[in-house]
Length: 331
Picture 1 (spheres, rainbow, N blue to C red):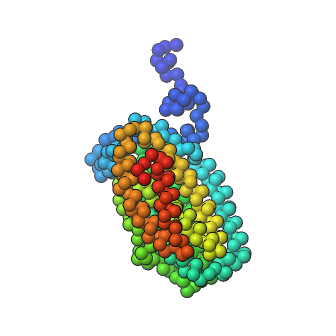
Picture 2: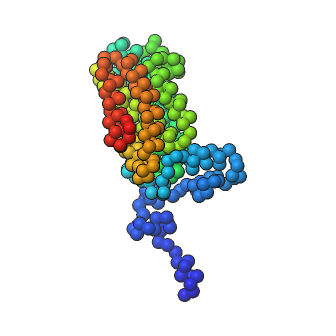
Picture 3: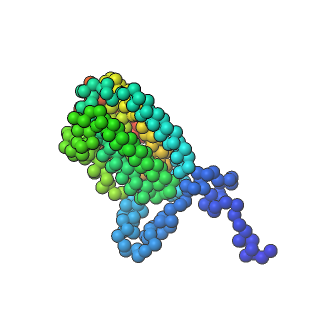
């Protein structure tokens, strides 16, 4: 056999997975090393290096102050792929559909207290706007991430936001049919843009959407905005719902929190991955310190409008602080 033939001996698996010395998993095969745009740091896309898109990636991905020697070694702790994500969320959707049918059969909405109906029109149904913003920010992170394994996590996070936005839209229509005088369907945009209790989240979201560095986007969304939203607009709103005998919303926020916990798992793994490079720690801490005041302000303003919830803001901020502190970040 010639020397050339020996060199061309076929590999048993993909070259970037061969060092594992074992058969790659489904997750590794369909998730790892898929970004061709990282092949040339100066020209991410197959076009002239001076084009606007290439410059954007040089500035906000390759030019990020956060670095790692091998981005493709990051792994999602849940090892989700498109197939398994859909299996999991099919079960989640069946559960939510069951809740909707059961509470509709019980004529749950007709029995709500008017004070709580008013709260739902101001605090719950306008939430589809922030979820749409979270979806957009997650898609941007997916597009800019330096590794396909990070992109996948952000993509599933965007899909989660779209799913729950859709559920809120459905509930908005349901409530409008039972309580037509409370502005359901018609007033949410005005409330989102003008009501004081939403302006903290609106400011935080709009500023996060122009944090163009891929990793600063990650910090602003996954370490500040999403935890603030999860603790104030899910957990604390869900607690208030149960105090007003709206167990339906309590169950819905509990179900949404399952997705939030998965998001926190990959967020925690990515932070720990970044901390492998000691130089990244100061950068991460600096961004956290920049964004946390906006997150705390958003929590304070939203929770002040929650009925019968005097400790909601303090509880929500404490839980956000605990999450970040557990990752060794300046909380």
